[in-house]
Image 1: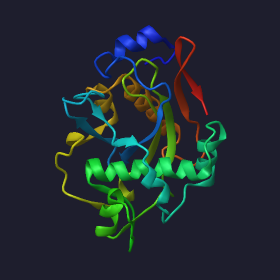
Image 2: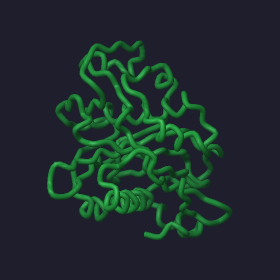
Image 3: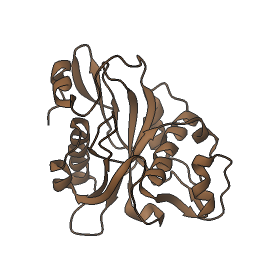
Image 4: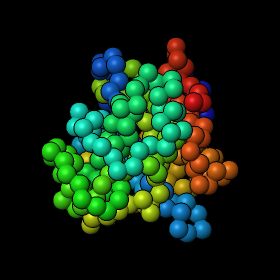
Length: 245
């Protein structure tokens, strides 16, 4: 799917994915985690289907994720982001290293909240925030060391909600504990799908773009080495473009 689209092209494609209308002028920081299963002959990714009642991407299959919350800045991860990944996150984003870690941690937290999957190392952990209490209860130390920054996308203006989303990838073996999957406030079901099948699922336009970029990278970099090229999708003037970070 091409990225060099006009704003009207994007509005038309996403008219059923997002609630259009007056919204915040500045997008909020958010993060998403793409979990990849490489145990078989091909790659599979984890997707969840959002509740149909939601104004933001109702009924769509998405990766676990959400906005970055203040509590995320108070968490000290057991393992830090790789220096090359941290450099990618801060180079052009006007984001300090601490904020970059908070954004990455929000992807880890949201994956627990929405999919019951705790990313990190088994070991004693404490947190005052209710948002992170599950890691303490299950004795898992959240870790960022194996996360890879694989894409960034800013929601165009004219949406009820806007996000500056960083997409991270991690492997299925990075899951320390997998709780029994069930419906949550955000997702109705959780599935692991081969990449080809995931691209044909009912997913938002931007999700398909990112899956295609990820598939291209995996074809030449199956281990997702640190510091890889990161596609950045955003509106420039009246065109929605893909740049490389």
